[in-house]
Length: 119
Image (tube, rainbow, N blue to C red; front, top):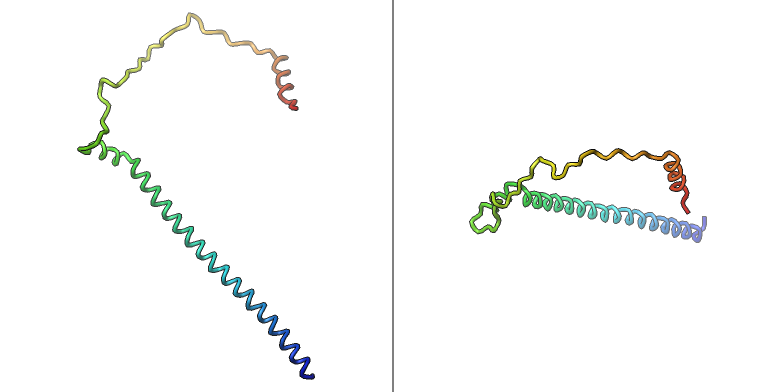
């Protein structure tokens, strides 16, 4: 084998090795990017959970009761003067209940056919 062929093969193998190293570096770089994104998602998920807890805490009965009983609170319980009583006696009674309407079979079939045809 002469020197020219040897240099050509060494150059070709070096080129292939550089391509392989570049691909491996790209894979590792993408793995680090994915890891950072996963960490960010976990952080956002924890923040979301903390925010949800804070919101539910603000809506809890204990928190609202504490706020109502606070000295400087403008919230008050409803007094008896503002309570409306609803009676169970019907307001208006009809002499007879209305008879149910008779449905026309032909009319309902035609309406189904008309609803089925859309332009």
